[in-house]
Length: 195
Image (cartoon, rainbow, N blue to C red; front, side, top):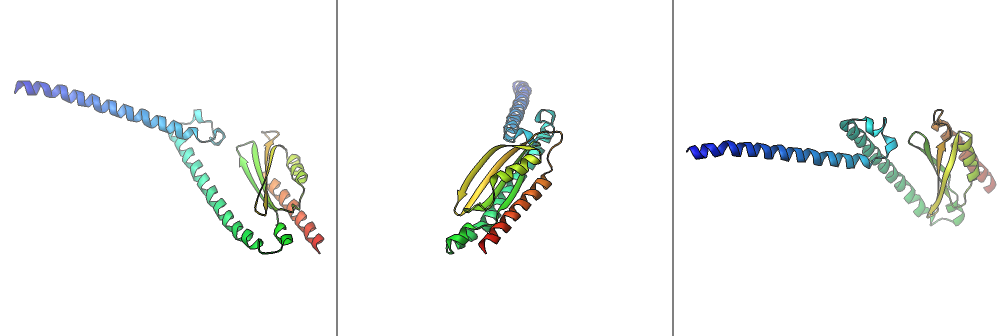
């Protein structure tokens, strides 16, 4: 009886140590997973820098980033569905009408000093890319890259621009309005030429 009573406190202490070790290992593992998750988020997304935020704040901003990405994916799926019927119906129409598409402009801020401009047009591009670049430069940015790709009867022009003076920044709404006016003017000129 004394022997079993003496063994009991030692096993209780050992099980307590085992639980502490398991808990410590679990916390270390969770901390590693949190670091991996937050490392997948672009550094410019964190508003102060990642190093100044608590782990909970980092996780909150990461969750917001994931939510934003999901909303963006949903928007793109809707746009794809809207464009898909148009492209299938345009294949049955005449080639001249399938290449004539009203240009669409989309702007996104990438951090505090970069913007992305996407212009979707038809194969018969009815605007000049140099005019788009001029608008961006006049509004205080430098175009750092241009990508052009086509899918079916659509041409996607993607421009990445960097703000010249970060303190001043760029009025995204104004840039978008000017580009919309440019595309509307190009559309009206194309429409007038078709008559």
